[in-house]
Image 1 (tube, helix red, strand yellow):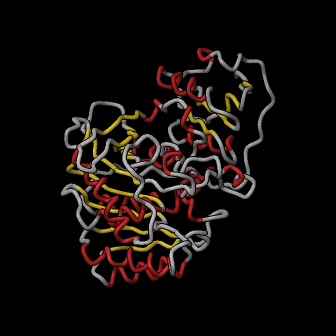
Image 2 (image 1 turned 90 degrees about the horizontal axis):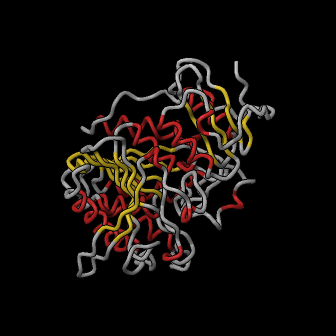
Image 3 (image 1 turned 60 degrees about the horizontal axis):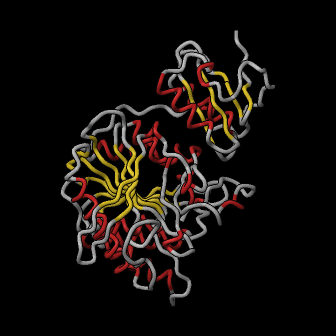
Length: 387
């Protein structure tokens, strides 16, 4: 389960946010992010309890074939069919920039996927095992897609999706080389001794799994506190599972939502990328996270300048065709938001939602710039000063 917030003043969103929006709110009606090659497809019905699944795909530019990361989403407390399409933008961006296609299937009964929700009940072990069969189906389907290099894939998941990822490891696709579990589990307080049942279920997966896995949990995880994830990890490894547990300590108001915001990237990105490289997955040289993403205060918003109207896309300095498209998409986003440009090279960066949008936009821009980036627009106003 994921809340689209970083501090208490943002947590009021969580009842409205999809289970895994990772940086975007109310995504049902939102435009697809073309800068990430986002598209939504329906994986065909295969009969015999194998329903059609709604699948979101993020791809790099080009025809591929691209190595693949399959991401398994979590679940909200509401009915599965009311849950919005999972759309992990912050997560997807990192892997697309590294040349990966990110594939996010909605589980049966969730959003527009057909079939019945099977994530209820008290047999957590069996629950994850049944969902894992659908992950295997997705990878078999990807074998038919020319853009996908299924011989090089990793499977990852958050919350309920983390449990499903570990269950999948018992019967993986031959091209899967790494599992990553972000705060995995399933919380059902109506089940007697649910924490112990979860510990036993997660631990039992290790007996039949030979793939390496990374586990990320925080001290202030409101769903699975340290005594739960430590006990589950111990059972998993003692049963024969090959895993590394990364304790991230306290993160924001709730470590369960580590990968919602860019601020969480330093805690998991390099560890995951290094493990992918170690286990034979193609990963280019790591980018260095800009220091400005780590500051706790935002950059002040400059005064409105009247340089151009906010929707005059051709007035934005030095933008390429792709940059103009990104700016047009940014215009459709709700505030808070910011767009930054390097006028010397046309590099750009933008941010939407959450805290410190100005600093984040400048940081993203500076990753690709060769000179200093400056804010072009904030919310609905142009703040650019021509020099």
